[in-house]
Structures are given as C-alpha cells and as structure tokens.
Length: 314
Length: 291
Image (cartoon, rainbow over all chains, first blue to last red):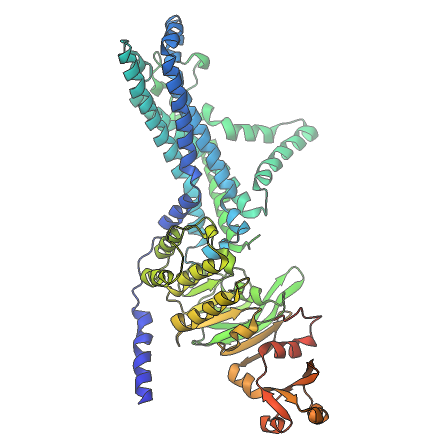
C-alpha cells in the first residue's frame, strides 16, 4: 500500500521536470534592459542637458528685443550665425554630455559588478559572458547615440516652435529662424555626426570596457594614464610624438576624416553653405583609421569577454 | 547518471594548490555538506563546479564541462553564493523580470507566491531590504527555477537565527525532492546536520573524510562515560576527548554502541565535534566552532 502511494507521488514529480515547458528566453534583450535599469544616467543626463539648454533659451527669448537689436546690426553672415548658435549649442551640449555618459558607463561596466559581487548573481543565470558583454557594448554603440540624437532633435524642435511663437507674438518675421536653421537638413547632418563619432570612438569604448574588466579599481586611471605616460616617455626618449599623435587622431580625427574641408572653416555659414556639402561619407568610409579602429574595437570587446569569464569578484 | 563527477580535480593559484586531486561523485537526490576550515578549498571546488574558474582534471556537472558551457550549465544548476550578491540597485520586480527573461526553467508564479508570504514589496530596491529579506528574495528566485543541482555557498552567513531556520525549512519543504541535488557549504554545521544525506570534510585541497550520514551515524559515537568508567572508556581508544562541565566526552570511531552504552550515555556526535576530532590533528588552531 505504502509503496503504491509512494509510486504515485513520485511518478508525477519525476515526469514534471521533463514536461516543464522550457520557455523561450531573450537573454540579450533582458541584459540590455538590465543595463538601462542600473544606469539611468544614460537617459537622465542628456535630458538634464536638454533642460538646461531650454532654460537658457527661454532667458534668451525674454531678452529678445535686446538680442534682436544686436543681431540686426550685424553683417548678414554673423546674423545667420547668431540665429543658428543656440541650436548648434544645444546639439553640442547634449552630444558632449552623452559622450561623457558613454565613457563613464564603459569604465564602470565590468568593474562595478565585481566590486559589489553581484557578478556571482549574474553568472548564476544562463546568460553567457559574450551576451553580457555585447549587451553592455550595445549601450555606448547604439543606445547612447540614439538617446543623444532623439533628445537633441526634440530639443531643437521645441526651440524652433517656442522661438517662432515668440517672434510672431512680437510681430516679427518668423521665417528668419527657419531659414537660418534648416531643421530637416540639420537633422540628417546631426544623425551623420552622431554615427561618425560613435564609429570613430568604438575602439575607445572597447578599450575602456576592457580596462574595466581587468582593473581591480580605478579603471579610469588605468585607462588614461598608461597611454599618456607612454607618449611622455616616447617624447623624452625619441623626440617623436607618435603615441601622442595617435591619441589626438583617435579623439579628434573624425573631424578631418568625415567632413569636407572648407577653405575657411571659421566662417561656415548655414545660410550660404548647404549643410550637406560638409558631409563626406565616402571619404569617411574609405579612411583606414575607421576600419583599423573598428578592428581594435572588436579585439577589445573580445578581450573583455575573455577577462569577464575568468574574473572573480574583487 | 551522477550529477557531479570529478576525477583528479586540481586547481592551483600560483604555487599553492587550492584543490589537490579531488575525486567526487554526487548522485541525484543527495544533499551534500562540504565542510572545511577557511581556505580549505570549499569555495574553489564550488567555483569549479559552477564554471566560474578553469581547472585541471576531469569534471562533469549534469553531463557538461562547466568551464566550457557555463551558460548552458546554468539552465540546470542554481546557486546562491552568499546573501550579499544580489545587486543593491535592483528592484524586486526587475529581478523577477530579468530572471524570467533569461531563464527557461523559471516559474514566475511560484516565485511570486513565495514572495507573497514575506514582507517584501515588489517596488523595493534590494538595498532597502534587510539582510534576511534579501535572502528570502534570492531564495524565492532560486526555488522557482526547476534546476537539477542547487549549490549553496554559505547561504545564511550573517543572518539571524530565525531567518536561518526559515531558510532551511523552505528549502526542504518547498524545494527539495528526490530528483534534485543540493551541495551546501556552511560554518553553521549544527544547522544543516539534520538535512544532509552526505558529508565531506575538505582540508588543504584534499578530501579528509567523505561518507553518507547513515555511515556517519553507524561509525561514530559520542560517549559520556560515568566517572568510574572513564579509564575503561579511554582504553577503547577514543579518537577525541574533551571536557564538558568537568565530565569527559569521547568520540569513538567504529566501536560497537552496545559496548559503549555499558559505560555511560551514548549519542550520535555532532559533525562539528567530529570535524574538530578529524581536523584538529591536521590543522593549526581551529577558530571557535569552525567548520
């Protein structure tokens, strides 16, 4: 009797496991979600920058009569620049904030989980090191650029609308603002700029993530000081600046490589020069620096996967 | 098929061998306690089993090579490293979402039902929970996973008595069945003695003693001899003797219990006492009640 009940209670149990529906999973998607939960600065910081820009812009509008007197007294070129500068400024502010967020994100991406030992929790789940590192790489390579782009364009549209309303309310010519800042073309140009910077900086992000996976603490120092030290040593020893040039090229080289060089860059005037004329995608795509950089990026991310796999909590 | 199978497992850090040739065979349905002093190699062994570190020798866990296939292994194996590994920033609902999103054998309703019996709010962050609640949350996540092997490394470290008791009660009543296997290391040996089916002493990377609890109970006996029988008892070669409140307590290995019972009171010893008896000779001072 007792054996019969035993068999009955065990049998369904025994079958239970194999019958348990194996639910489909999406480790990559949820790994990315996880990054966004943890690092809310990814979207909060650009939004805060946008808020500051709009705040400044509103003050400018309050001072509008004064601003317009100054602006109307300028030669046409400078006039155009005066109209365009708040929009360019907004883009620059949000872009810089976004890039800073991306860099600091990378520097903490694989060290933080070891420091708080949560790596033991993440590794107790069926998400591979490759999936995890790819999800983390996805943040600076896609999420941050998209956030930068979306926040910037939204901010500029708000600025255009508020600006137009204020100009109209003061009985002034609304079209000036739209001609001085051709929104549609500028949107395309800005998307190009963000894409260029992201591709160009990919090896930097990879380097920062690799250092983050490797360094026990102070990843920022390990990431920044050795290259600088190397360039100083090189300078003293050989009187050359090969390393320093390489760093400069990687940080600012995209300007030369991805945009048309104009005879007088200082006087780029939106009204007189089509923004599209500045974009040089063929030149950028044929730059060895881009492809070599991407190769390095892949190598750095691969090294990060390798390091995370064998790393124990700090 | 064995759940864990190790042959000549070795792991060296620099020149020191953390694991020095471990042979291990854990069958399904067992609860194995790994006991050893700090630095004996318990955690290193578990880290090998979980695919967290590379090793030399042969190791198979649920038929997989842990180091090569950690992510596949983690579909069949769960582990709680210690109470402090849940990320402090995560909210309870996020933890549920994430595990449900990556684990094919996670039963969310089960986890929610377990959480409903606790004070844990779905919107709380881990950092806002008490240590005991964090353990409850981790346990809720792990028990809702239909895994074949559960590895617990000091799961109740720093918890108060009540939570420690609840932890093992939940584990036994709501989780364990004959198809699951549990490997646990803990310093609180007294608490797990009742639930173990097997025990293993590890010292300096080697297995010092390995037996089932039935063997343990058959083989070892603790005698508190009557004062006049002390000398006679000593003549039977106890492997360990200690003084409690002026009376001797002697630990015997393989001495007939009926024989011993003529000399005084006979009990099954605690694992902790056996540990001190077996390891005392081999280790430098054992700290307190160490295990």
